[in-house]
Amino acid sequence: NAGVIQTPRHKVTGKGQEATLWCEPISGHSAVFWYRQTIVQGLEFLTYFRNQAPIDDSGMPKERFSAQMPNQSHSTLKIQSTQPQDSAVYLCASSPQGAGQNTLYFGAGTRLSVL
Amino acid sequence: AQSVTQPDARVTVSEGASLQLRCKYSYSGTPYLFWYVQYPRQGLQLLLKYYSGDPVVQGVNGFEAEFIKSNSSFHLRKASVHWSDSAVYFCAVSAGSGGSNYKLTFGKGTLLTVTP
Image 1 (cartoon, rainbow over the protein chains, first blue to last red):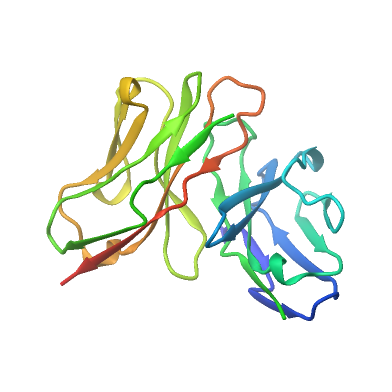
Image 2: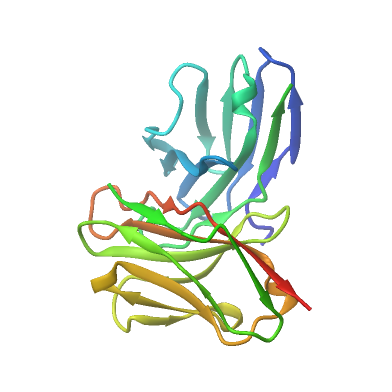
């Protein structure tokens, strides 16, 4: 089991460009989460899918961020017109179920640097 | 809504010494509580979790934590630290029986440095 795989590990974009981050959850896990990690804000919940369906995107900045899960083997987080304040580590996690007591398995993250 | 406070941003201890990392949570109901660890350039890994039963829970690598409801605390402890324990430790809470109990709320983390 390779764990949660995130690609790329590091992405550099210019201000105004688009960034797409990829996540491959652990096979058989029905819940997929995206979190953003910064020094100032810490770990912030972005969005949650269960059985590929979007359940909660309350943490997503509405205008430029979008997430999809087209099949059970991958999810994408897209940021349009990236801004310097989007620079962060974006973490994907999966879980066997969405219930609160279940362990989240995190990927190593994608470090996004917006110049 | 729930929240987590980790009052110590950085903790330094000598190898072989005991350790306590503090965590206080805010949630009106019975929470699910977690400690995760993040090593450099890696994702978070679960150390231990609590949601019912014995308030002292054992985790991996000799870590344990105690749920004290009256104090809204879930401090992490280890009897004797090793240099490899140097990492960032996160306390997290989710709503116990609430509708959004899938959502973890994390503290800001405590950077642990173990010195020789």
